[in-house]
View: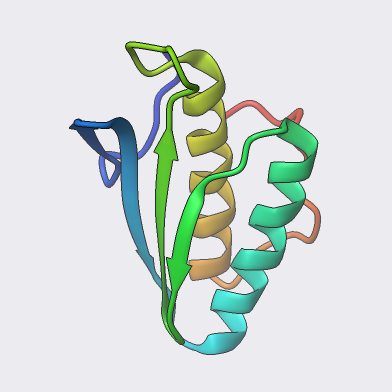
Length: 102
């Protein structure tokens, strides 16, 4: 499986990955949400998420009938790691490519 941040937590019931990402202000949070939406459209993967002014919580669930975390889920988590890190470091390039391998 691709390497993802140690900040992701694996849950067993239901099977999923979870992560909470903190931002310094609402502008960063909004930027992250916009980029995550772009990645979701490109990857065809739509997480459960909730957010407040300065954080986003994500839950990446396996597809119905799956019994373990798969490549598609880890790929999405990896892309989320890239944009979260870039935004938090305020050096985020616009439009992270989904072809980028970390």
